[in-house]
Length: 193
Image 1 (cartoon, rainbow, N blue to C red):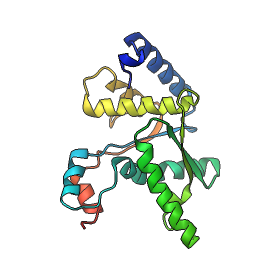
Image 2: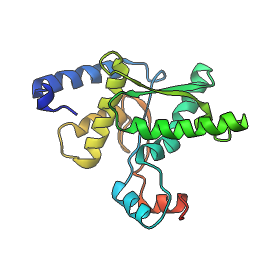
Image 3: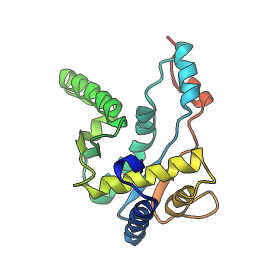
């Protein structure tokens, strides 16, 4: 994420991450909610090779976790539809937007939403993180969660602990963290062709 070829130095990264952490820590925890999810991609690949119909990792996380976030947000703010925004360069937006568009196409033909998650999403759009700082903050949360999973001794892994918490202590943000989506979970939840 923070590569030197893009002009990032350790000092710049520490400043940005510190600023984002301070901003997030100052937000009323009842007004913001984070969600963290991880998929065992090696297991997903194996299952697909065995003939299981397993969605892209981003779609799996969306289908499992976005429902919780949308429910939380719509109850809190009394709205019925959600808008999803992703950084324009985010690789996950394509699979999530494709899944949402598929639902929209079915809904136009049938005039009724059969899927409670995708039917509550009004739109999925890319935005520039340069002009939408909330997306940059989400990216840092995601980045730290990924570091905690892949390199727990990394200096940035503890940022996820501070923001999202651990099983032993609460983080600064209201959040849902799922245990990694394992092969057993994907095998049980997905049909085999």
